[in-house]
Image 1 (cartoon, rainbow, N blue to C red):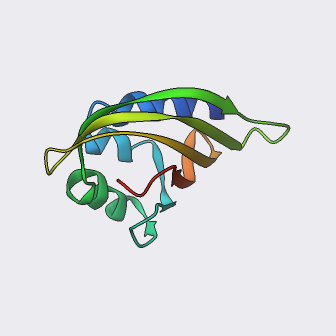
Image 2: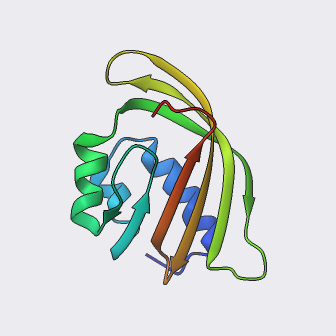
Length: 121
């Protein structure tokens, strides 16, 4: 993969995660990446991320709509605000706001933290 800016990598992440290809999503993270998300213990490393995206994630399908992507003077730090609409594995529908905070290095995600506007996914 050619060198991607933090903004471009984050946008690629959302496009990829919405395709539901767990291996492709995990390939965007570094080997030692850490992901923190409400309702789950911290996930550290590609194997933990593959477990999450491949089976533990309660989302069956859906789409992220990005409202804002912000990366200030430090291009390794990227913040995102948006909405997710989709279907959970139990068949219920969700429509909720989210905020994500990414740290990127060498065109890979090294840390991600997610926050939701309601306790749903």
